[in-house]
Image 1 (cartoon, one colour):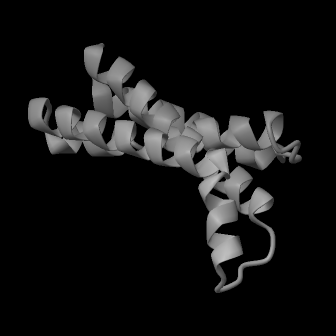
Image 2: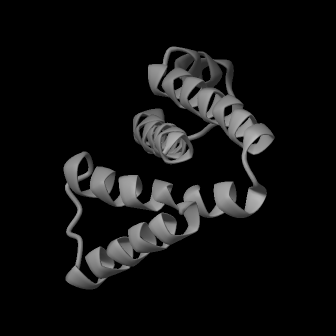
Length: 116
């Protein structure tokens, strides 16, 4: 049960990092090789949120790999797809087809079977 909880948190952090990256890229504007562009990115706080999320996810992943079998831990990283689908719907207002929801249910069932 502890592995599932930690995998859920790690997957949420991974999803948050990807979500923050998309928001940072939206706020970025047109890329240019200029100091003004670089300075504008230093004040794009979505990049900071992205880095913090990925760093925390990476540290938690190291803890998980150290304490559980790789054959159990690695498949649970697919839970990030579940959170990604939810974020796509709630944050980015994307339409999710019913077939995608079926896929998400299959991923969740597979994670349950792997963890037990």
